[in-house]
Amino acid sequence: MDINKKNIFYEQIYEKVSRKDYKIGIIGMGYVGLPLGLAFCKKDITTYGFDINKNIIKSLKSCISYINHIHSGEIKKYVNNNKLIPSGNLKNINNVDVIIICVPTPLNKNKEPDLTFVKNSLDSIKNFLHKGQILILESTTYPGTTEEILKPLIEKEGLEIGKDFFLVYSPEREDPGNKIYQTHNIPKIIGGCTENCASIAKNIYSQITEEIIVLSSTRAAEMTKLVENIHRAVNIGLVNELKIIAEELGVDLYEVIRAAATKPFGYMPFFPGPGLGGHCIPIDPYYLTWKAKEFGIHTKFIELAGEINSSMPKHVVSKISNSLNDICKSVRKSEILILGIAYKKNIDDARESPSLEIIDLLLKMGANIKYNDPYFPKFPKFRKYNFIIKSIKLTSKNLELFDCAVLLTDHDCFDYELIKENSKLIIDTRGKYTKTSNIIRA
Image: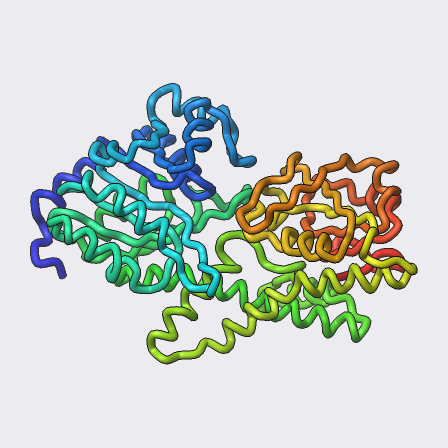
């Protein structure tokens, strides 16, 4: 129980939020921050959108969307009526009541948590923090981050958490491209450093989200996000291992999974693929394994799933190599078409996409690579991969030029019949085709 359940700063911000007479500042306007900001704008709440990427701020000011499933017209509407204020100047944090941090939390080369973006954000705004504000971290992290890192840095500025400044962890649950579940109907998890903190955050998020779930602590909220993604990573690792067994048994695993999914209880379907992508599943489990080592705990189950999932791009390349060898061709100098570089279907997001590692491995083996992805007309730039490959149109004539087509992302807009009819060899990593003499599952 808070020592001072009712105090002037708590009452002031709670009442401002209740009247919708407050301003929000969102730091990080990417796949999480932009949809979140627009959700607040829809409720007529002035929202500052901060980002260190000058191109993002420029796009927002020009009312041009850089995320495929968000229309430019929506951005234009709120920029023009001054509800969405793009800014690269963090001094404006002084003007807001609510600060939400939505910056990346990647892994370093040793697969350890890298909180550089979170720490840098806090360091950049610390001189503009003041009494009566609430700061909410949405970036995925390990249990203890809010209490162990953010709280001391804020208190160092002379602010008292729960009394004159409020601190919360609320994990993002954004699923880019999902047309059914969006910000308004995805239940929101909240963990406050104090009851006052959680109470204010609940009031804020209830204005844009239908269901709020308040947990007992920031650690519980941080752990919840990791459990969600570890659950997916482990089960995908399981079916990726089963895929290899099923291949040897001559069994169609996709048929088996769909059959198992007819059981109305005790089973949830997961499907194999060429590897894991996105910012969550390939990264989040390692946040918990790293933290567990602090207590001398070795997370064997989680790490094994990570090993299996990480091995899938090499498995796909092996399939490509063996399949080409069966038609008397080597990977070297073969013309290979990559279908899809997004990490999942129907989105323009290639973060941690297994397609990139597969392309890299094939290029090192001497293959000639081209690609098609309707969400990436030009091959994007990546820090880890510096290769540039050419995009081609999917036509009968073009498909016939390739020794092999590799389906890595099963976008709905692909003309699968056209691909099937005009490709000499197809390596299918998504189970879109029935296996035949020239269609190989991988």
